[in-house]
Length: 66
Image (tube, rainbow, N blue to C red; front, side, top):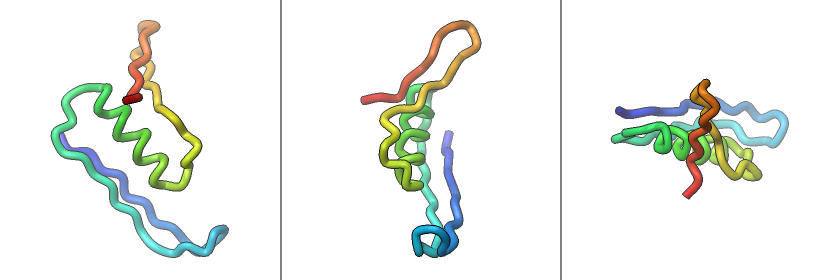
């Protein structure tokens, strides 16, 4: 599976005007998805995010940390 994030930035508030397209090919499981989302959120400028967890609804959380 291929997943992508496409974001458009305007000049407010940081002065950056542009786009970000971030994609991963060969996503195979929830750990891959979580790693992709963690990296994508960091690429959006939220560099303080360390990891993204996905709640499976049964009490289990899948983390993407390396």
